[in-house]
Image 1 (cartoon, rainbow, N blue to C red):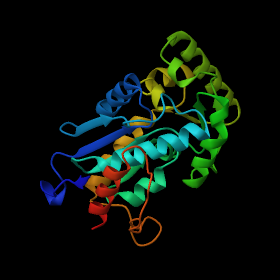
Image 2: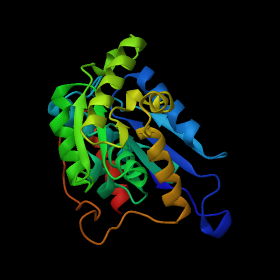
Image 3: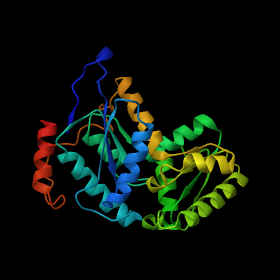
Length: 266
């Protein structure tokens, strides 16, 4: 991956190019994510939504998350086109910090992007996600990003990721019910804790009476903003480029990924 050559106004690339990477290989989910990202993007911004070449059909739990992170990093390491920012579209999934090591361009994770937006609108927020098994993982991700202190809770709707669109009435009822429980717990804004929930925030906000944040849309606004501010990931220490070394067996495309990484580090 290479950064889009500066140009346009004050060195800001024109048009801005944003790569959106779904954490799973389910193309219908990637299409939902792409639609939300494009609806939030500014006119002229080029949004490219992709999936890993291999991985998991849906990320539900730690094993899925680590497999997905490996596949996502390999996809980023071998992506051939220019981009100005990357969005990781997996709520609470692993790989955020590693992607920031790997790339110079801003890497925006939908998890902390959505939480930051919620905290600009309310002093306390809550998260509705899919399954109970993902709750602690999401809490850990919010804590690592520094946005957990004002989260009143993460509640699961009891919906497997691949069933989110199977029964729209069931999904809506489950999210609204959990949203009301979080409001009772003190939440004044709600974050939709799954990329598959994208595109529904406005209707939930009308029903619940509080701001509801679409995580993909929130990430798009941050991605564009960081590019316009001409900011990039700090490489002074924590997110410094990975040390050159052998990484044998890194995924089924390990040789291609290693070549791409070596070129990136050169």
